[in-house]
Image 1 (cartoon, rainbow, N blue to C red):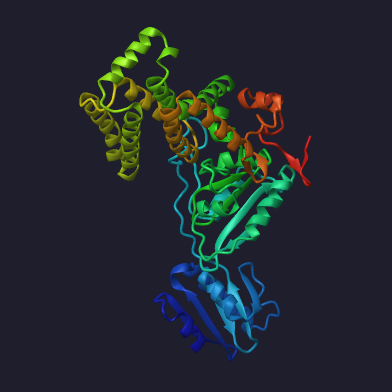
Image 2 (cartoon, helix red, strand yellow):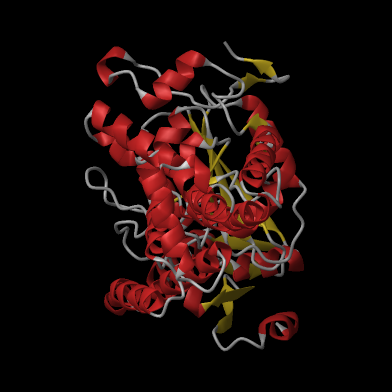
Length: 466
């Protein structure tokens, strides 16, 4: 008792009681705020009756486990919401595993809204999230491995994959990286992502982040791996490719041709969001001659009324849009939407009226913002918005030469980028025409019983899986 008091006395919700079962001392201890009190007391009464009736299997119940006494196991069990019965006479403990499960009900994901399809999303409880996945995949081939990371938080992490389809090479790489993690606290999947991704300093995400269980199931069926962390309503999916971030569940829930069209529109938005402001700056600063004469005169006239170089116009408007976007996110939803619309109209008109930016630059920046918001992935959308700034600077200094050099550097970076040692640009590089065609024009469901794969698939030993 003295040991327990010294270890847990700082917590008001720590409960400890001395009991007598058949004249044998038993010590009951638990955190009152972390257990299902009614269920635990009922279970303990059941165990006590079996103990006092000298049942040889008194300790064998679906909700309990007996172990040798150790202070480390005692601290871990109580801290994770288990009720512990200590038997000093036999120097053992009996763990009653009935923690209180506090979780909100699954609701529609805020950041991944779809017009047609499932409207439930992950919550902050990993057990509920696994249930949402198993409900959609009723097969014994679905394998879920449980790990605990964080010496203080003891965060439960689950690795989920389909045993018959998983990329074994990627799975081994993932397990090896996770096994090397040594940290005190793990509180989000984003923190875990930093430890296991291939290139931490790359602006491009190498794990697909999603709140949708149907999207997780679709990727698992393609041979990918999902990672769930407790207290986090998102899943990480790998290995992934650049094209994966431009896919939306709506592409597969609606008409095939319509889904293919909008996927092509999203991929076109990648180039618009990165290159359009830089292209305009290069034209306005160096290359009037490449545009038609009438349009060139319009550009010259528009720029001549602005006291700044095009690069400063672009930076002013881009930063203004980022401020409006950030304000609309941080404020409550009704106010945030109003700020986004009214702020954009009022500030944009005021900037043009004051002569701080041209009408053409406002149009270019507005189109760029729309193109970046089309991306279904929030992480990739943020990366694209950041990438346009170095391209704008290069175009303002070197013109089209700066654009070409920046594009070459970006292409080389994407070429070298990997997700769990798998090519990020697959199936473009390495080039696989059939898979690339399926990405843009999927085979109708009634003609295909196999999962679509748009990443380079390897067997163990890094040999291509035909």
